[in-house]
Image 1 (cartoon, rainbow, N blue to C red):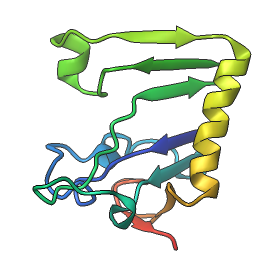
Image 2 (tube, rainbow, N blue to C red):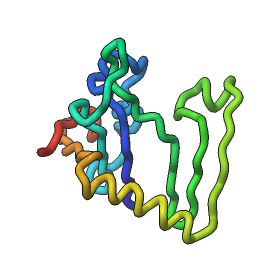
Image 3 (cartoon, rainbow, N blue to C red):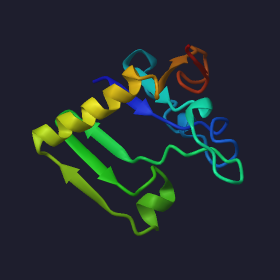
Length: 129
């Protein structure tokens, strides 16, 4: 199964992340994983100059979507009060897929290109133009 991720890197967050999301998925197979990000230059900034954050939590697995508040962290899974919903209504799942596809088509989300190395397939990524 192919995996498509939209992730925020520690560098792209300008210090707003305490953990690099890209590194959390470093063990995924490089030939079946597609990673996108939201470029800093495309984000609005608040009064303090901090960029907007990639804050969406949505997973689409085949024909089911999971939408919720939880980050993919130990705290979220074990200590926080989080909420989520499972969506199986096919037209809604298709709309979510189309939304993400449109963000890629409009280049709001941009592909990371994995760099192969011995330690981890996705540990080091670089932006494609």
